Amino acid sequence: MQSRHAVSTVEDYEPFIGRQAVERIVNKGRLLSGRSVAHVNSTYFGGGVAEILSSLTLLMRSLGLDAEWRAIQGPPDFYGITKKMHNALQGAPIRLTDIKKEIYEDVAYQNALRNRFDHDFVVVHDPQPLPLIRYSRKRGPWIWRCHVDMAQPSREIWEYLTDYIEQYDAVISSAEEYRQPWRVPQLVFQPAIDPFSILNRELPEGEVDRRLHHYGVPTDLPLVVQVSRFDRWKDPHGVIQAFQIARRKRDCTLVLVGNVAMDDPEGPQVYESLLGAREERVLIMSGEDTSFVNALQRRAAVVLQKSLREGFGLTVSEAMWKRTPVIGGNVGGIRYQIDDGVNGFLVSSVEETADRLVRLLSDEDLRRRMGEAAREKVRQRFLMTRYLEQYLDLMDAFEA
Ligand code: UDP
Image (tube, rainbow, N blue to C red; front, side, top):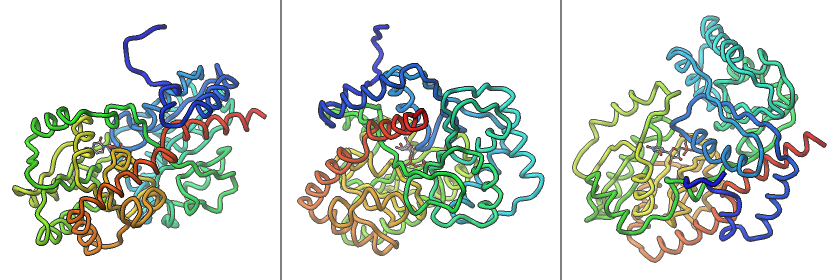
């Protein structure tokens, strides 16, 4: 069916990955044509998983796979519990009461009743829908794809979830150090970005100006930008502190852009805790208009992603793709994107962040060189076609 709507295909990536890679991926897709794949997560909006699935499922479809995306439904207390589980997988303490377990398991059961997951291949993302496997009739392989930073999970959550995880045929995480002693094959796939999405596509300078002007972002001083869900692991208060220190040496404007994912009930609280820091040069803004986020990442002199834990951190690759140098927390998946001192900086404290910020703000040539190296790193490693191919290879391996 011919369509006037913009849906990108693997062929569109040719300028970035070359003809040979396009042909290789298209051929792999052809072999799996008609296979049904369900991706299951817990939100259609907000956060990196939704961002990836909106592109990945369409790209799979463009190759002839019957790819679907389903989000489970649950009441607010369910999301309160799963957010605590998410935090506990990233190392925070948790108290798992029977009532919490009951709510968590009931929601999975209800979603299994409401949906048929009889696909050739089912990929369940993150802890929220994890127990679905217990209540579904399995036809093909089921994969648990965990996006969180599991370098040091809390013992209690680890023991509870292990029962479910070991029912899967494989686990995919975003870094080698997230591997756990589970009796199930474990793979590492790093996430990737879609260069054609509204968030990442090329924007003419005039359009960037219009977006920033529309939202009242001043452009008289260099912009320092962090784009993150309002989440304590993204350390927004640390970002403001680093900015205040750096500003004493190099004047600039900070724009902290954020949103709240539908499955994250802690977001509003984190947002409110930031409002007191608002001033003329500290803007706390909504990042729901993704072309505004695109414009900010492009125009920023420096992007920060000063996370304390980070499974991968798409925002890092997004800014790097736009040739903007990123100062990122030296944690989790950020370390695989930024090569310290080459295409950005890795930092472990507020003071280090402020120091690297002053360095970058003082040296336009350094920003330009790091920005170019950053773009090249993403081109080679973090475009969606690479991620897609890993899934195709995995499906193929299960069929063999
Ligand atoms: N994002 C956005 N607006 C915001 C905050 C985030 O569009 O206000 C997007 C961001 O550009 C990225 C995704 O949401 O594509 C967040 O993914 P990431 O992996 O950085 O972090 P997560 O939220 O999954 O922890």
